[in-house]
Length: 458
Image (cartoon, rainbow, N blue to C red; front, side, top):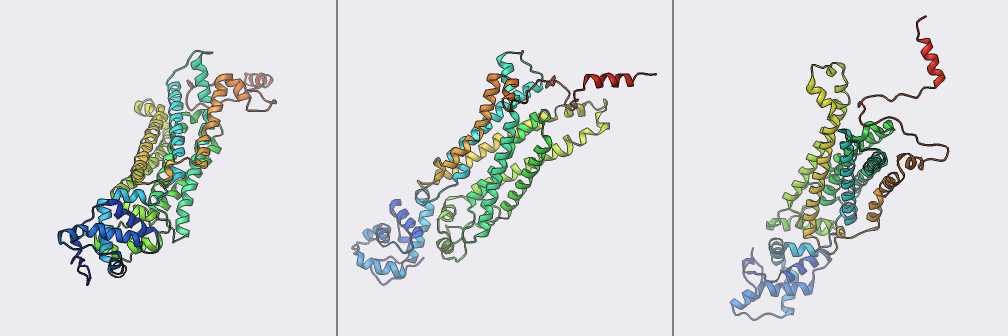
């Protein structure tokens, strides 16, 4: 690229420009994007760094600042394009760490990371005990194992309800994130926020799915819980629809090629002028220079796979497990394989949801680490905020209820949840009973005698 000039200290084209100090170059690039005017001092230092080698090789005396400044203000565009290009190729990490990217602390902050870890660890513990009991493990009465199993079983309901409410809150927050970007055209949803919101929303469904699959048949209030699941599914499809239709999602967004000089002259929204006039908080600038298209597409495919897994799960549950396998002709003794699948259907669904939960958590940490590698001091993902601390306490009532039931016993611990007008009495129902057996209501002794006498032949 030719350099217009009438000065003897200027080279004929930009190929003679050789930068040596990334600190000088990135300081200028940062000022260029974050200030309204051309940074005078940083520009003079930039010219001295880029043309210093040319001056030394051609025995040219270094011009003073008053000679450099008029040319920089009027004809310095080729130098600036070369500087930004060199910044992207040679000093990208230093430049990205200086840009004021704030991250997404509401979903990826340290407090939320701890929250996800606690939830997945508790789900793993609860699932292990439920599965052991389902396969016949019955510890002796009045032993530590028996009290521990009882505490797990009787505190599963509040844990499942809390996990469902937590997932609903995550989906509601993700929906608002996308809606704000649609309402205000000058502040579109950043790509990292879109990916993080959609993926965390889908990830949050797997924990309650695991609990529901391994313990649902022994829990009550099933109709209310089904309504919560229907509401959560509705929110999930809203979030997915908003994500795939968002112009800033990796699915649709245009990625600028900063290695091409034409990109810096383009008036497109993804080009240089679009970032200067549209990106007031510099979040899009950071994404444009610091987020690789390949990494964003990988995260996008992770969302697609997580969504496909959820659709597969709900299809297996609502179509096959909950309906098809209840047909009479499928209960025939001539179909032993179907009998095995029907008997262990909850095990299959539980393991599918459990594996998906941990895999999604690992993918989330990979995506978060990739972003934090290029983020600077303004990144709030490395901070604890008040909202994150409140989020961690989501599981405190679950732990407290487990402890109370374990310490006091199931009957006494559950009785403490009610007023003094009621007392919890243990029934004979165990995990060893048939899965689809309907509970029978207690019959009054007098009514039982009347029914028995009425059934006798005359």
